[in-house]
Image (cartoon, one colour):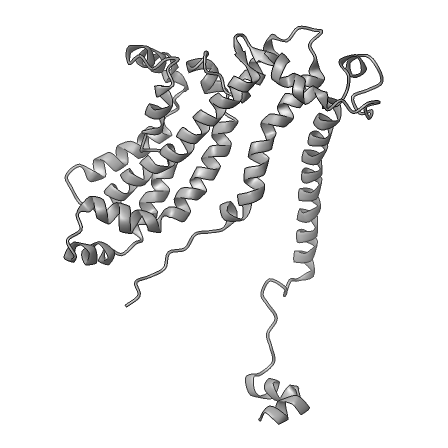
Length: 308
């Protein structure tokens, strides 16, 4: 048979039949036009993002006088002033908070919010999906309803609560904020754990494992792909957060909040190339994270079944 296949490659076609084209490749003329149009639209959108980044980097290398009075912002700098990035650490500040302190505040806030804030919804999602107790459905429904209520109108009450609990302008606010177990992430964890077979836990109970050991050693490790995906996405969002920091942590401004404050308070003669250099520095962590883990973020997660 091997000799026959080598002499006549169509031998396999006669046995297994003609190979079918993939559904993705078998597109009609109209579908090809639609996909081509969609590709062009996304290409143009991508180029606009690249243009904005190029414009920012190009002007971050200029002299303040050159940017403000000579030519246009589209012109290339006469001299590449990479020293603007060093000046950013000296000149950019928000009151008494320097550029370096802003970076440290951003790192602290991002680490706490991303790791702890992605873990607490896993606990609540696991409990409500795997344990049956009185009030379970009530808690779940109340959580859903609270997610639908706009929180803008509760700003005054929220500020008063923070002052009463001595959390206003206190780094402990990061920890307390991360302990909220009911958000959109909670729904994903609830569905995730709901799809896991309880046979895992039953097997562990036979071996003498308690509920804590079942969660931390059996159930949660299976949710690690979901957990780390949310850690990455939360880290990107936390690093770029500025509104909450300005309102509730004025003495602990993050990099995004500090740059926003600097721009809002900037005088007419402000050194904008140095400010642009600070913006470039603030963009590096999020761009790096997304470039490294974009595949993981975009990949859909699947759960394997029990293996006997």
